[in-house]
Image (cartoon, rainbow, N blue to C red; front, top):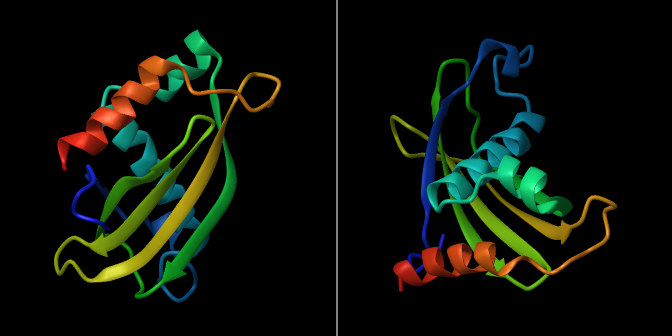
Length: 143
């Protein structure tokens, strides 16, 4: 991840239910972990998904998701999810993720998601200024 962006780290543990027959975290869980990282990133800068959805009617629709798997995570491993905003537009936002093992910092996956801001009918809308300010402030804080 680029060092001039606000990066938020979230720590989780691989649960037994998230592993496959080989004892490795099943690949689809990485996208769920990225979602956890994204929600916690937003919370860390003062944006709460629930409030954005319920109070302002803004939804973040995933329009693109990419994950590159590098190394296996196993049951009870601590995983660090480093999340940052890659690009902020008036109607969309993109996040970058790096997932690594907590004990060795070895990379287990990297990824990227792109989202379009939508209203309750799933029509694209402009991001309200109060949220745009928070995202921009977090980005500028690291410059």
